[in-house]
Amino acid sequence: MNRVLGDKRAILVLLGPALLVYSLVMLAPMLWSLGYTMFSGSVITGFSWAGTKNFSTLLHDPAARAALVFTLKYAVVVTVGQVAVGYLLSLLYVFFLRRASGLIRTLVFFPVVLPTVAVALLFQKFFEFAPQTGPVNSLLEALGMHGVDWFGSAGTAFVVIAVMDIWRSMGFYAVLLYAGLVDIPEEVLESARIDGASGTRLVRSIVLPLSLPVLVSSIIFSINGTLKVFDSIYALTGGGPGSGSTPLTLLMYRTSFFYGDYGYGATIAFGLTLLSLVVTLFIFRANRRDVTEA
Amino acid sequence: MTTTTVATRRGPAPARTHRSTRRHLRRIPLYILVTLLLVVMVYPLVWILLGSFKTQDEFLNNPTWALPHSFFNVSNYGDAWSSIALYLRNSVLAVFPALALVIVLGTAAGYALEVMVFRGRSRVLMVFLAGIMIPGQMILLPLFTVYFKLHLNSTLWPLIITYTATGLPLTVFMMATYFRSIPREVFEASTLDGASAIRSFWSIGFPMMRSAVFTIALVQFFFLWNDLLIALTFTTQDDLRTVQVGLLNFTGQFGTVDYGPTFAAICINMLLVLGLYIFMNQRVMRGLSAGAVKG
Image 1 (cartoon, one colour):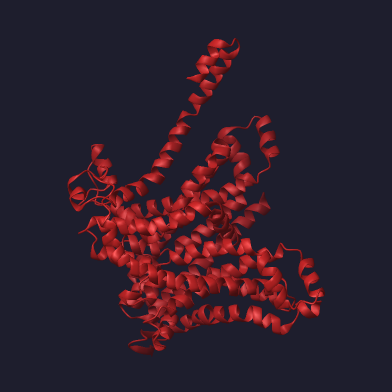
Image 2 (cartoon, rainbow over the protein chains, first blue to last red):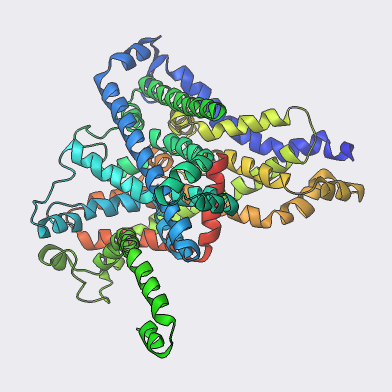
């Protein structure tokens, strides 16, 4: 039997193609990309040796610093927003809507599967200032305030980006965290209620600690996505105004394909990979220590 | 209303009615909150749908929340469709072959890594897993170089190949997890009956995984269909654009000038997904969150 299930030829036939495609199209390019960090130029202009120049540029480039700051700001705000709103929603589902939550859960989840480009264009029109006054500015005007040119400055553009990405994905985190909350045994909640815990106290002392593992994996998942944000910002603001909303991914894209500098582009991509690795490990570690202390 | 009529007829009821009214009163902020939530989620979508029936004149002269004059004004859709149709075709031609490859290769690899016995299989699984972490930007430049050198840039092959590879890590990992839940005895029995390893994969493993395969296909479909980065990088010609890249370009062309067709194009892109979601929403939600927890 083990002779059959350990058949080398069968393993090769089953595993070989996937491993081959994966190695050729993902692993090899990754290593190749690391090699690019020591060159400058592009496939069209040809490459020349650059040594560690790209790395020293990365450390002193004001555009890279601005992009790093934007990436971190976006990642922190949107991760906290997604997970916090998602958690509130999941509490709403479990403790207030209970059985009736199915329809609302499905509805709030829907934007998750919508094409990012479509949602971004929708928000562009929704927050429009001129020539058509979009619903948001119309509402502001109806309330006696002035309309805002949302995409006219980096600060307000950031607000729209954050609102859009939280709107788009809160339903996802709500469902993820909902699954964690449903797993909390009813007896635990019941005995806490008998002991007199209710409302916020119940959430803080019982529900929150017990759903911490799901919460942490949500945060890790979310921060990994937000550090790599590209689609939504590219489609919504294109990184503008100027380069006021340009994250590292977009800077990498521009450097490589608009300015034809593959070497520096690859260096930025490498920096980004390192950043998400470090952040993930950091959250992982911080969380593990908490658990052992408790 | 009905509770009051019941209350007048029965003796002990008033107290109960009183309590339940109070309970309902206490829950009013909550109802408002839920209503607000629904408005925030649904209104943008309804607004864009209503807009797709409006004429340019209505866009510029009527308030933005006004209903369209006529729901039978589908000329916007005609305008949008004439350019979106090609993009849709490209998306279909790039996504579905890649999807089929991802499923077949990924399921076979998941089976090999979980059911078959050989040294180093957990290490191979880890190698696949590492692919989930790699940002797309890390592989774009070398791939672009290769596709350029091979003159594949004027075809859809770069998209099919790249989509297949980027879809594999999650698929392999999820399939391995699903195969773990099937008792080993099933495969051992089939080998005792004389089936080869590949035969028991095709005749036993794959059919048993039908539901899981369908879920993963659905999840991967959304990832690939909604992709922007890869399509943007590897399609350099207008007639090769996928629907997402095409839509971005579309607003560049009509954008501020012509609202109706833009709104209609956004709606076409959304309605397709909506159609799929209406029938499969439970499966989609389960599949996507399973992929997240494990990823």
